[in-house]
Amino acid sequence: FRLVHAGAFDGRKGQAVVVEALARLVASGLDVRATFLGEGPARAGVEEQARSLGVAERCAFEGGVDDVPRRLAASHLLLLPSESEASPLVLLEAMAAGCPVLAHDVGGISELTRSGACGRLVPTLDAETWARAARDLLLDAAARAALVRAGRDATAGRTVVATAALVESELLRLARRP
Image (cartoon, rainbow, N blue to C red; front, side, top):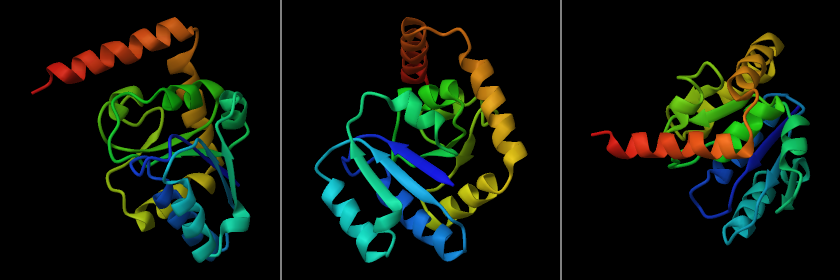
């Protein structure tokens, strides 16, 4: 299986959670690899964590890339364990590309996933919980296919401008929330 994470290595996007969940998945017997897209000051620490957990050979740190949608489409699951998010564009990109989403239930993520209809939501940043949630989805092709259909339906016909407008409207709505 192929996991993917896309985001800046800034200490808040949850790459460390992905590495620890990956190690737990591998220990459980799953043949799984993770691709990390993005750059930032925390990357070296995440690479060291992968080495110390014995999963470095299962991690591809690819940096900033120009073909994110293609890489999302080639993956079985996007993991987005961010500490905080408003309305992450990568979530919409994954849905449009046909990549199922597993995301931390923070900020505007619930709204973008239509309360989990277009992606599974995880209420915590605990790596064991993430590993279980990822394992459940990886082993359930029908559930992944349902998320792909719902995600594509939710993003069908959206241009970049329309997607940006959706993100902006969600941000404004969230800003008005008490």
